[in-house]
Length: 233
Image (cartoon, rainbow, N blue to C red; front, side):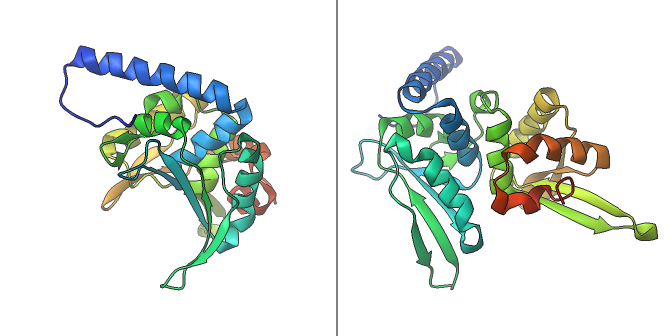
């Protein structure tokens, strides 16, 4: 059952959170391997959305990537295919001319559990529980979805790397929570920067960029190596 948000006492919110956590733990253990859990949670933090139609009993997932990143989406499909929850990817050209690969799931109780965790009403939020479940693979999937690496030319022909992680769809408080998690869990000092109408994370200290990219590198699929090329050229 999909839960709706409403004003409830704090103690009830705590009980509801624990109930959702137990529900998620149970759903993940039944359906996903540890690797699949990381890929799915990283994807949910990045380029994907959960949806529930008016007549749907359970939620479903949709993931889309631009045509140039089709091999990356196919990697996700191959990694998750054994769950039996996903339809084969489809290719679509939108009216604007935008070309995309799209991966859709079946409607399933697993996605309903995730919907209850990731959405407040119809708005996608950052669940702290999910952040602390993410390992290097999950973080790398999120980075491949929403991160970018820029190499800027500075004085004396020196080159300086800059990582950006797009979090503009989340609130400032959520961006700050992600920053604090990245510092405490991974020891990388991202900072929160305004990017109207939202906020994004940035990392520009060269040694810290190098450390982060070396952490990501082993989990980045070959077609996305451009996102770690500062360390893997």
